[in-house]
Length: 188
Ligand SMILES: CC(C)(COP(=O)(O)OP(=O)(O)OC[C@H]1O[C@@H](n2cnc3c(N)ncnc32)[C@H](O)[C@@H]1OP(=O)(O)O)[C@@H](O)C(=O)NCCC(=O)NCCS
Image (cartoon, rainbow, N blue to C red; front, top):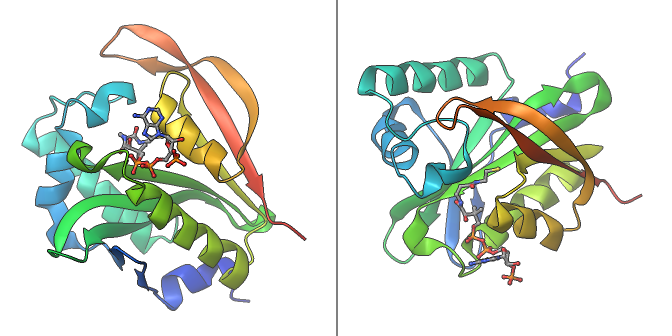
């Protein structure tokens, strides 16, 4: 039987908000993917280095496309309506069908930070996931020092469920980093 969660992949949706278009990403978006993942500011709180080679980035991008094919990840690109500029992405992944649970992620070019752009995108995707897809729980995990990301999650009512001590190895710092684990339940 087709799970409700599969609707995300079968009945593909784009969204329009006041300032933004959220459009499913495609294999043609590699250059933008590369721009984001080689940006030092964006990657500051990531376990990944911003200095990856094009070959490695291509491999990562292929992996994302393959996860989408296998229905474990879906990425929308964030486009600013006023000039049609691609400025970020919002994605869902780590899908656990039997528990109707998935993980939310987001990235925006730094020149667009702190003006409520990602709040606008997150608001739209959360509404879709709870109302149309009937997701039971949305999770998000972030570097515990990533204040912007934590504030954004808390603004939408995500609960801090725990600090995962030295949870992930950050090769670029040669140490294990604490991560904050957040969850948001569908209101019944
Ligand atoms: C995290 C990120 C997506 C936030 O996007 P954004 O569009 O700047 O977020 P918003 O402007 O919608 O702000 C959301 C909330 O974050 C907080 N915030 C925004 N700017 C902030 C700042 N400079 N300092 C601290 N908190 C801030 C505020 O609480 C804000 O809520 P408010 O608008 O009600 O005040 C963006 O900073 C980013 O792409 N960072 C790099 C990638 C990343 O770390 N992704 C998350 C990985 S888990």
